[in-house]
Image 1 (cartoon, rainbow, N blue to C red):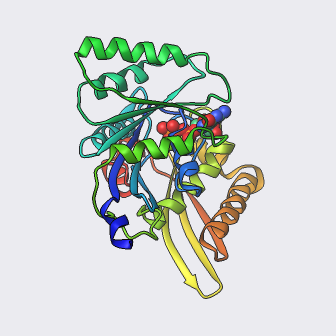
Image 2: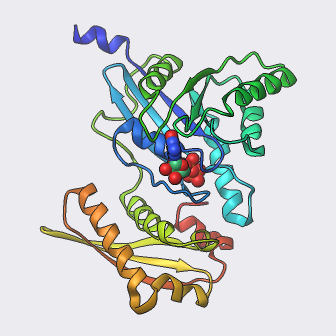
Length: 304
Ligand SMILES: Nc1nc2c(ncn2[C@@H]2O[C@H](COP(=O)(O)OP(=O)(O)OP(=O)(O)O)[C@@H](O)[C@H]2O)c(=O)[nH]1
Ligand SMILES: [Mg+2]
């Protein structure tokens, strides 16, 4: 009996793409029922390709959560776009996420064109229907236009729902399983992500900052976990917070160190929950002029 089940198993890689802020990371966290990728209402929150692995009796889907494509500004922006675009080649299927509650952006159209030019099976998830479905028809009409223009025979599967309110997700998973090939599991079944622990910790800390900072600052900020000291009853994480200018250092530390302390506290809380061990976070704020243009720093942070 067991043998038979394995024979019908499917396994494949699904690249999750779409412009920034449509809810790709939220969707993945909801599909896995665990937080594997940080989320915020600031553009370009995700900066690395994060693999999130869903294993069921039906098989395994290895999702690649990609940085949302946005008007590329500087080296960091360009690298993020390249990362997102290259994740599509090599994937067994592509999941394009659109925001049904908002007008289409140029980047949404850009993704449609890119997918219509290829033959990779594709599913389009119309997200945020809890807010409104005002632009649902416009999304479908736009695809028709693009497909006609490109002479594409690709027939995407369309699914509507809400990542935030868990709507349309079982349908989404089932549809994805039909798009990927039959085959053995790609990762051991107990693995949820192969995203390195240090990068995940740095992302959680960065998320706490992004939630508390405004304007351009979230984009000027990077976090690097320098060291993790593990003792039987606690982990102490030493992390550097990079900013680009001296004036930003003060903001990131806050009056009497208040902002820094609050970020430390919130990150400790979340990481303690996540890893099931008491986590202490120690942050050092460093000024690194133009780190977003510095190849070596981008590489160290995994953004290049
Ligand atoms: N109302 C509503 N909000 C959502 C839904 N999905 C995501 N959001 C919100 O949209 C914002 C962006 O979500 P993310 O998951 O970070 O978006 P993303 O596509 O991963 O963005 P990047 O990483 O920048 O590419 C967050 O504030 C989410 O809470 C949804 O279904 N409904
Ligand atoms: Mg994201």
